[in-house]
Image (cartoon, rainbow, N blue to C red; front, top):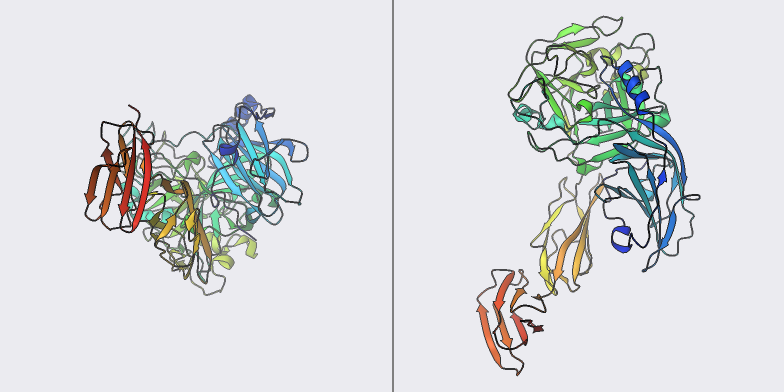
Length: 614
């Protein structure tokens, strides 16, 4: 089944550049919002020690390409279908597609009216085989869906949107960690503070989850796990109660296919808040300890419906299914759906119970650290408990710890109990999935999948004159053995050389560059939009008496700039031995309004007429 990554394709919706919004207004479809007072009452009643955290509800809608939206023809051929939906009061909105079928060459974007947040492009390659999927919520109360249909397409578009994910809390800007602040104000510690310095690999295996259970949405946390055959089969461990609501509802297979997984959702520093949303949609339930009469160790094992894009750099965490205890370690988690946090313990774990079966959980008491008093909160459910070796030994069920009560003990379902003790069927155990070869191994280290090629590149420059050349360098990881470059406006337009040089650009404008790399395990691609800026050799024109001469930085020959007046008489001459810069500023003579500037760079000679406006 193909993967669905809402960050892979990139690009911009065509309407951003081609349509005049005043000339082609788009009236949104107004959707009746939910009763916020009723939701708040339910959340108060549901506030329990299990640390899943409801943040949204699904609102049924009927929006389709056959009955809604508007079509606009594009001047260069093809056409757009757009539709806008609005639900007043939402902090964020997501879309649930019951069906979608995109013709070859077509694509789809979802974005906010202010163009700040964009998902896409999505093509037929990103659509699951059952044509059902969901988009991650975007900030605000209105979304625009834009479909591009290329010329001469005969396949009929099919888009059927049946639900809106209405997010009413937990969708604000990421919280800044206030270092050494009042612990009762904000005690959580960003994973990239000093407390996380020794856990940089493990953090890349911790995932933020937006779960769907019937019509309700919750935040939880989860962990990618390695297995004994190391086949990187995209297994994710979280808590079983993340797949249920507080009223007895259980997530269906259709619900699981719409779960959203956020990778690397963290700030780059200890107190900064910028994040990048890298998401996957959809998972399949593999195993769980979901005995209705006793939750046991409260584990849920999922398998993603698609492959994890190599550019996400996932770490497959190790685990310990033995019975040994630990006196030091951390929990890495997403409290309230926020950026990744880290909590530290430095005392021996206790053995505890959640439910009627004894000794199913580890009991943890958190320690104050340099930048806070990391605890857990709603949304931390399912997050991993790491021991001193960096191995997962438990998954969070809940407990009374909070910033207001940092001394409260939390309970994590033991990996050792989840291994085979919740039941006799493979669907009730971790062992069949984490030790599929039945090796008997009880301790497995974590690892990256270093076989996967991840595309990346750089260049000798980004701004060049018309006719200038650029050299490109492959920076891909994972040992690719084939390369395919695409240069918009370049000569040649394509290359299969690892580090192509001397690519000439003869067209004005900002040009895209794409690289596809492959090896025996996978292929990966990257597109850097507007990467090469091809400008005039002489600018501005007209000018106020001063012009800028843009040169080819890859041409190291001597540079000569000659200025001729209207009579053809040379007025100025500048010579540079070995061009050492890509830009030279020339002040023209004060007499005259028209000059000819001749640029001699090695064997390249160009002449440009310049008008001076005094």
